[in-house]
Image 1 (cartoon, rainbow, N blue to C red):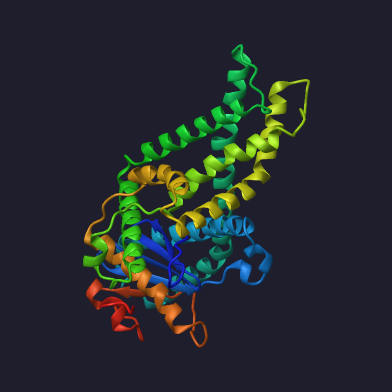
Image 2: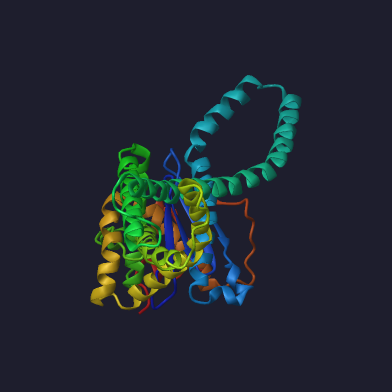
Amino acid sequence: MPCNTKKMSVGGQAVIEGVMMRSPNSLAIAVRRQDGTIVLKERKWEAIWTKYKFMRWPVFRGSVMLIESLVNGVQALTFSADQAMIEEDSAKEGEDKGEDKGEDKGKDEGKDEKKEEKKEEKPISRWMLYGTVAFSLAFAFLVFKGVPHLVTTLIGTVTSYEISTNSALFHIIDGVIKTLMFIAYIWGVSFMSDMRRVFQYHGAEHKCIYAYEAGEALTVENARKYTTLHPRCGTSFIILVLMVSILVFMVVFSFLPVFYEGNRWINALLQIAVKLPLMLPIAGLAYELIRVSGKYPNAPILRWCIKPGLWMQKITTREPDDDMLEVALISLRKSLWRERHGMEGLEENLDEFEIFENYESVHFEGEPEMLVEKQAS
C-alpha cells in the first residue's frame, strides 16, 4: 500500500497475528505470539528499480510494485504463521526433551540431526515460497479472469444479442461478473474467525499510518482515533485494477481479430491467454491513478474513483484492539528506525529477530523520543 507523505513513503500489510510495514529502505514484521510476547524481524529493503532505473518510469513502476508486494507478502505470511504457532511448537519440543532427559549424547546427536535437517529444508522452503506465489497468481487469473470471460461468452451464445469481444458490452458484463465474484469471495472469507483477526490487524495498520501521516506521536492513543479506511489501501488498488481492466480490454480487443473461427470456445481460451500479459500494464495504470488520487484527494473525479475501494474496506478492515495497535506500531517504528539511521554500518542477519515481553519494553537504540512522544514538525 503506497502512502505518499511529506516525510517518506510508508505502507503495510496485515499478516497472521501481526503487521508488516515497509518504508523505502526497510521491511519490518511484528507478530504477537500465543504467550503474549511480540517478535520483530526487520531487514533492509532495496527495490529492484534502484538497479534498473527504467523500472521507475510511470506504468512500469506499478507492475514492479505489484510483483514485489506479492513476494514480500508471502514471505511475511510465512514468517508470521511460524511465529504465531511458536508456543505450541515449544511445548512439543519440551515434551521431546523430557523424554530424552539424562541422555546427553542422544541430545547432541538429535540436535546435530535437526541442524542438518534444517539446512536441507532451506532451499526447499524457498522454492515452495515462490511456487506458492506462482500458483496463487495462476489460480487467481484462472478464476477471476477466465471464468468471467467464459461466462460472458456463454451469455452471448445463449441469448439473441450478438455479444463479442469487439463490443463494449462484452467487457462491461465481464467486468461486472469479476467484481461480483471478488466481493463474494471477500465477503465469504470474512466469516472465518482467523480472517476476521487479519482484517483487524489490517485496520490497525491503517490507523498507525494515519497517525504517522498526521505527524503525531506513534502511540496507541493517537492511532486509536483514526478510521480503518485508507484511500491508498491494497483493496482500493484491486478495485481500481478491475475498473481499469474494463477500459483497457475495450480498447485492445476492438483491434484484435478472431483467433480461431472454427470454435467459439477455443477462440475464447486464446483471448483469455491474451489478457495475461495485459495485467502488468493494467496494474501500472491503476497504480498511477492511486498516486494521482493521493496528490489530489479532493478532486471530484478521483474521489469517486477511490470510493468503491473505501466501500470494500468496510469488509476487509475491522476495528482493532489496543494489543493489535501495539504490534502495528512496533513494526512501523522499526521501519522508521532504519530510515533515520541510514543504510551504512548496520549489521544484518536475516535469521535473527527481537522478542519483547510487552509493548512498554520496546525501545530501539538511537530511536528519538520525539518519535514515540511527539514527532518533529
